[in-house]
Image (tube, rainbow, N blue to C red; front, side):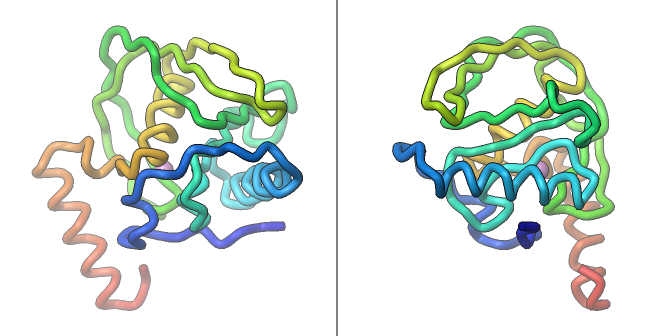
Length: 169
Ligand code: NI
């Protein structure tokens, strides 16, 4: 089922998600729906708060549905190591059409649970490192506009307000 993606400034986007404690059918359905929603929106990642569910769940698939081996489900994830810097463009399904450069660590190691409740660790660099950081930020109620320079953030927010007035946001 394709879920509705909430856009900024929906309050749920800026609330920290609740840790997941029940690994049940409801969680499996949420994850399946989140993948379907990500592919329908041509995204590479989605966090549960973006579909109005304030839980620490995110899905990532850099292949956008082309390679099942690249499907990643991160439950209760955390970043346990950060190295280096990168500064590349990011977008966010809760900010349609907006792309800006955001400073991130070049490489990160994450720790998360899978749908079977099992903890695992994984390293990512380049785009995967950005996706890890962007999606885990969502679970902390942190949005990529707040990682931009104040100048860029103000430009983006002015642009959003203009679209809101025009009824196109
Ligand atoms: Ni996002």
